[in-house]
Length: 455
Ligand code: SAH
Ligand code: SF4
Ligand code: F3S
Image 1 (spheres, rainbow, N blue to C red):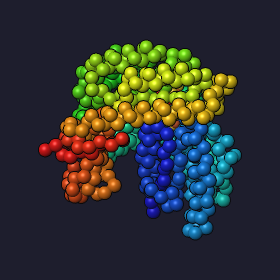
Image 2: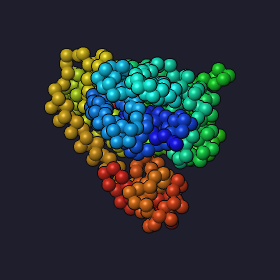
Image 3: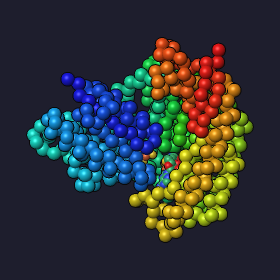
Image 4: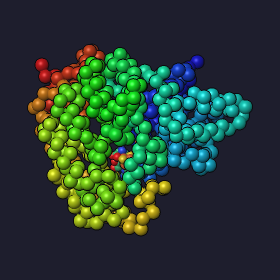
């Protein structure tokens, strides 16, 4: 009998990618995915440690799962293995099991390729009436990719491909260098091998992933170094991918070569997520961001010069220690100057083990919420304006999901906007599913567009 696997994913795209790989790895062990945790023999929480809220959510979910697990064994006599993976697991390790003894397995972002062995060990322990207490939080990356490469499958039209992981930048607020480890670029050949598999599986859009994807510097077997720009150009020349995207980029690693690609490579989509965090030089310096506001604005100017229609996105933190009203107003000014197509914004969250968490000049929480509200109002206005401007235009949309109803399809515009279309009936929906089609945008909402077939 096939076993069932339920995975809940928190956090960034890197975790989404990791979840897909866990599904692949466990499929080889005879596990099929279920949407219902109370149906699952193995429940995995693929967690995020970036802000306190995200991390605390994991513990409340574990509390709920404990009750579910007890019910399942009482009702059906079935055991559930409860596993916590991802960045909280890496950061807290066995502390999780001390706080929540119901957790059977803890594994970090660099060890999930060993999930089959861990699960078998947990099954074995349970069959002897012993509580499994498995912890695997090793941080060496290369073995993981080597092991995963043998198993990758992807039935979809759009796929993530991790090419770089970890971070050496050590922004003073951020846990990622500790939860994902140091910067690591996969080799050129490994990346191309995975790209080839996606290509063969019919993938039309690939998103190259990395915590600092534009710091990519993979070696080839011949010892040559490959930059992200060169890799994108090569993918465009040697595969039939219709769309190539990459995320997340660091402003300090935005090379001229990469900027030029946006004007030269047709498959490179006109969307760039380039987080700046704050518009104040004093604050970005205190954040240890390795760039200035002037250098960021220069990047934006240069990219708009080669690709005037590019949709820009960013991340912002408000209420970083020492941020005054004047600093915050500099962020507002930068946002008005850049004019984003969309963006993410957060209140600064003190994270254990990061330098800024110990600083005395923390900003009061009501000030943080006021600043966040002001910033988000402006960012939402900009997003709305960007979406409104799309109405009447015709653009290619990759219809990659079904919507709420069987006759609804949803896809992304070149600018990453979600586009909905009601194709009328299920049959037409099935015919167009997974296709890249020209759509005329007929209306716009705050977060999505509505389209119809252009001809
Ligand atoms: N590597 C990416 C971002 C990874 S984390 C980069 O450097 O841009 C994603 C976003 O979460 C960050 O850009 C930042 O805006 C936010 N973030 C990270 N740590 C945070 C913290 N301690 N408090 C609030 N937001 C945080
Ligand atoms: Fe975190 Fe900074 Fe590294 Fe991004 S660049 S992952 S924000 S430390
Ligand atoms: Fe969160 Fe880890 Fe991603 S902390 S944002 S899941 S790298």
